Image 1 (cartoon, rainbow, N blue to C red):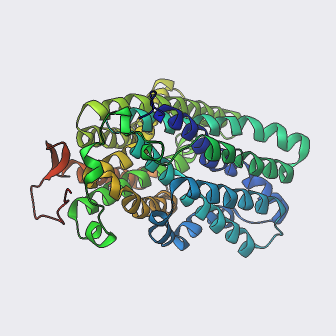
Image 2 (cartoon, rainbow, N blue to C red):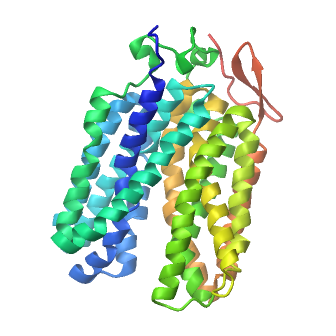
Image 3 (cartoon, one colour):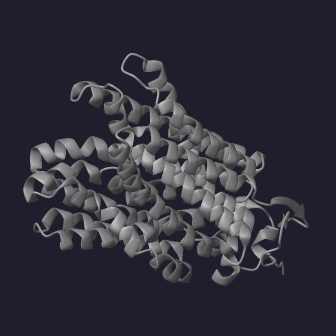
Length: 425
């Protein structure tokens, strides 16, 4: 055992690599949509279809690849693919098929270098402090994403959007030296144990479950459905928030832009607080009930969004702060719950299914909400459907089986038909 626990250095490195691989491109690619529209004459529907279409086409990729390679290798390959996609967007001709092809490359890069490998690394290095570490790493996404937001405007104004995209692609590759020289996949790689303990935790002895075992387990389906519904609801709120403001009396131009900016900033900073606070709570209290509470919190913000008006700023602030807090917590709680339910050794397979499915919900559910809004003429029915889906997600998590500590390992206390047993060595 080394004298000093290296895990927090790994968490710091993951903070930067997660922010570079996801925060920079994910939160800023939308900035360039109107430039694509002006140069190529594409419609908004054509442009925004790229990500959901790619998510549908690549849903098979994670379960086949993720569990076969180390997280560090996944990040290295994924960041290269993300760079290729961004530079492809910069140099592409006005052919939609090519544009969609680069979205497929981007989505594969996101699967490889995004949440899953970073969740795996944090989960292997931490157990007792896993929630705090996961929350800290997820803060990197928001902070690095905001750095990218500050960069894209001056870069585009001074160098053009083509060069700006290429620079963003180059910035993503700054993750490489951190991955190669600082990050480690597991504490055992350098003779340490999770949390710096003298002995390995009992969960390390829990046998990894196969895809078949996971898919035959009803708790896995509850977690999959619950996370799909909640992440889909969050995606719908993020995508439609400005349109809701317009429907509720905010004037086009500076007024609605100012409302959107205020809400976005509050959501971003509140999400950081949510990740840190809820991460700490997940280490002290039942992850199931912490997760259930945050899912209900996201659902509760939807009625508040529908009463936001130009003359009632308090509702705007209330919505943004509560929604951001819940949103930030929701994303990072999924891997914590998966590790809690199925063991850290099964996390790669579990998240290889959960993340692509959640990405489908996050990208396609907003599209169906758009259809409901157009047919209904307002957001009453559309946001009512978002509320219903969010509540289904919260209820799915609420009925997950409880856990108890038995011999130091997590064991299901099942209230219904048993799924595949988790065996300990």
